[in-house]
Each structure stands twice: as C-alpha cells, then as structure tokens.
Image (cartoon, rainbow, N blue to C red; front, side):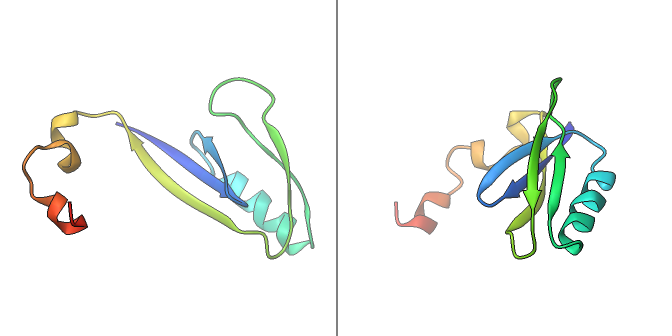
Length: 88
C-alpha cells in the first residue's frame, strides 16, 4: 500500500509524494508573510508548479492509500445494504 498526499488549493487538487513536511512549512511561511510563491513538486518527474499562497486562501491536506487488495474494500462488496442508506 502506498500513501499519496493530496493538496487542494482553491478547489484544485495536487497529488504529492512523501515527504511533505518541508512543503507544509514553506506554505505556512508564505501565508504568514502575507503571501508568496511555493513550488509544488510533481508526483512523478518534472519541474512542478509554482502556486501563490496568500492569507485566506482555502488549502486542504489529505492522505490517500493507493494499492492493496480490492476484496478488502467495503464499497466493492456486493449486497452490503448500503444502497438503502441513499434511498436507492
């Protein structure tokens, strides 16, 4: 199982490899300084993308587990009754 980090900035998603600790610190510093550009590295090779972060900008971090056995996922099992929770 691989862990991928998702950074959502103003409604746009960016997927990042580990580690992200230094990147989080750079973003926080840019916001505390009143705004600034931070380079967001790509998930796979390339130069990345520079994003201007500023106070009040919506930024969300999440972690996603990628890989593993599909049989272990609850939402892939047939007949678990979840359809009734949504009125289907």
